[in-house]
Image (cartoon, rainbow, N blue to C red):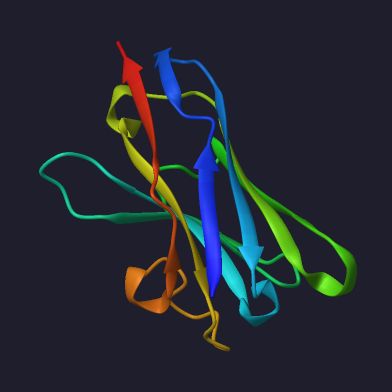
Length: 129
């Protein structure tokens, strides 16, 4: 089992910045890649950004150039922290943001929720105009 706990959400004005964190614990040896997803009220969950064990990243078109995903690894490539640096925030970025961890060996389609086995509870991001 892998436990994920997000933090760092809040309310900002348009153009502002936030940094989300996700603390991973448990059997993190099993995770191959991790990601951030978001879901706004009345909308489907959307993959925002993902990162794999060797640092490859993938971003949704809507956040490219504004968001940066990164991770800290402890010894032997054991992941313990995932981050999402968000700059140039827009009202349409308002959503509940969740981190997720995948045990799949295939990094393809890494922004699809079905790839992920473990999920955090989420942290709310609200951007006002």
